[in-house]
Amino acid sequence: MANNSFFAILGDDEYLVRQKAKEVFDELVKEFPDDLSREQIDARADRVEDVERILNEAKTAGQTMSLFGGGKLVWINEANFINQTRVGAAQGTKDALDTIKPFLENLGETKLILSACPVHRGHGFVKWLQKNSNYSDIAKNEKEDVAFRRLAQETAQSCGVSFANGALEFLAGKIGAHPRLGVEEIKKLASYLGESGGSITEELIMELVPDFGDGDFFEATEAFFSGNLKWALDAIDRHFFHAKDARPLLSNLQNRNRLLIQLRVLVDGGELDPTARLSKDQIERIGQKHAHHFSDTGGKTTLNLFSQNPWFLGRLLPVTKKFNTRRLIDFQADLIGAFEKLLAHPREEQCNIFKDLAIRTLSK
Image (cartoon, rainbow, N blue to C red; front, side, top):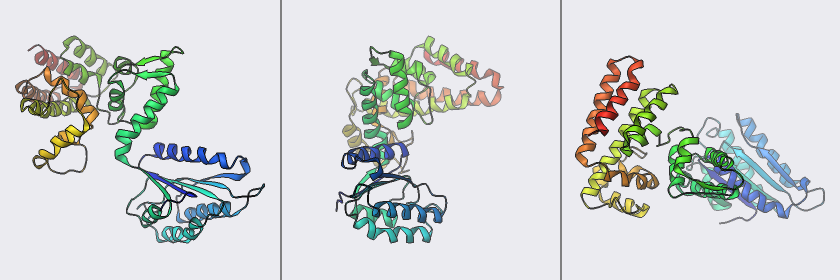
């Protein structure tokens, strides 16, 4: 049952939850133009006593009339106790949440926003919120697909720039679809393009945006699978010039190659066309057909093509035109050989081992 006086915004990503809550807050502000009729409460709690204090503050704020009469707008911001952490699972926290329910059910002229992250969706209070509030769940799958794209497009538009074909997907992969970082990197790219604006391209992202976290793209990996030997050798030099270790590069190459092998098999079987655009529905349909071949790990793994982001797979699919299945399998064997060499040689030889790998692989 939607409650237009009580808004609950929960999710897995702090930045996205806060942004959504701020959108609701900014919309409701129109009804509460006086500064004294609005109140934000920092809801980060380290102890059960903090939870009790935060909820009491919210209740007091909501029940106190504005200086000019009428209700108030209250935002309980960044609540971190609606989960199974030590504080969230404590009986005192559960009791405090139960105690505030009658107030939340009868807000009168007051309007209240509760934003919380991280949350446990099996928590009893979450189930109560679903029935008794205007409830929004900024779920993880939305973070990775829908929300990042929307946020990136909105940021680019506000900065007067646009994305070239494929560039948005490339950025998502390079920074692991991290929302806050995406916003900052788009602003940086827009600043580089200047007041006249322009288009954010893959080349510009490659040049100016660093690899981050679990991002899928590293320049050396991109260069390897482009088939361009000169670019691959230059990219390897840059990788090790910045004192990067060999392990993440080797891991990325192996992960990329595993996915390419699986894609190439589907191409050879006539289930995918490397010249056509890959849709999310298409990959889901093929994934259901072949699901019995994969164990359900519940997470993303390169051992299961269908656990990957469709944007990313769509970007890899054209690469299969450059390598047949036999060549990709041979490359996987070459990577195992490179791993054995890395174990047997000093760190100073790592760069040369990868250069030798590129020359032997890409010169065929």
